[in-house]
Every structure is written in C-alpha cells, then in structure tokens.
Amino acid sequence: MRMDRLRRPKGLSAALLGALLCSPVAACAQDRDPRLAGGGEVSYFIAPEDPGAGSRPGDRDLALRALEAWARLAAPAVALLPAPEETAALRVYWLPAGAGLYGEMRAREVDGKPGADVFVHPDTDALGLDIALAARADPLFRDAIVYLTCVHELGHAFGLDHTADFADIMYSFVYGGDILAYFRRFREQLGRPEDIGEASPFSAADVRAFHALYR
Image (cartoon, one colour):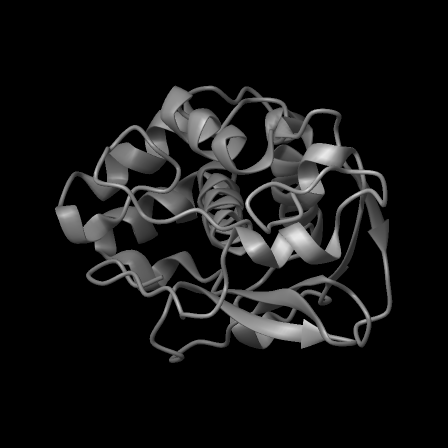
C-alpha cells in the first residue's frame, strides 16, 4: 500500500476465504463457501518482528489484533489458530525499508486451497515528514498506523476492495484526503496501548460490505 497508489494483486476474492476457512457445515452461496459466516477456523502465521524492516516489539500483536477485528465481524465469530508458516492460510510479513509499498496482499495456495500473504512496512518514516514526526513523538500513534495498515491489507485478503469513502478502513489514498487526519481519527479513540483492538477501525460501510460476503 503506497500512499500515492494502493495496489491490490489480482487472483484473490471472497472465494479465497470461501473455500479454506469455513465450517464444514457452512452453507455455500453462489458457488462460494462463506468461510467466515460459518463459525469456522482460520489458521495464521505472523512473522517475528524484524528491526531491519522497522518493526518493533509488539508489532506481531498488532497484526494479530487486526486479524481478530475481522474475525469478530463474522457471525458467529471465527476461531483463530496459530499454524506453521508452511500451512497457515493467512500469513503476515514485515516489508523491509525501500520495498516501495507500505502494504500489500498477495494470493497463494495452501494444499490446493486459496490462501493469502499480507505484507506490511512498519517504518512510519516512509509516510512523509508530518506523519513521521507525529509517530516519533507519539508511539501509540505509530502503533495505530501499523495496526490500521494490517487491518486494511487483511480486508483485501477477505475479498474487500478499495473504496472512495474517507470514513472506511478500505479507503484508498488515491482519492486524496488528509492522511494525517485519517490515522489521527483512530488514535483519538485510544487512551492506552491496550485499547488497540478494542476500538473499532471499521465504518458502517465496511461492516455492510463484509457481511454482504460472509453473512
């Protein structure tokens, strides 16, 4: 996810989570198995923090909280299961500095079934001077940015597209808008680090779009 151009690799859609993560008894709809709608299980792997990529202790927990936020939207909620890197349905990695993207999602296959890799560059200095200075002065603001980036890219893994609505977690900055204000809006809901994962990152439109796929 670059700030001037968000890119979503092709080949992944709601069908990804429709075939791999659903309950065995979940009903299929339109030739798509709505995995998250059936109260099934999602296996995941989150790479260790990498100082060379700008990640910090606690970033793995931010990524897990982002995954939990989506899992809670399912009805009933999905069980998240840690798994080996080779077999996990969803995997999160930290992009090194200079990779050119702030976040990205890529489709993959796991034993013939669809899966997804999410890549996040956690170095907030890549987002411009205003955000870099704000993140240096406020570690919780920095963590909010990393968390929201994980939420956004995982949204693509669950089949959601970009939107043009500044209120949405799936909003694309190609439509403009005040990037600093976008992240500060969520930061203002936080009083302490533990609040990340408790405060909702979603707009009403995000929830409707997700439920349209998985409810």
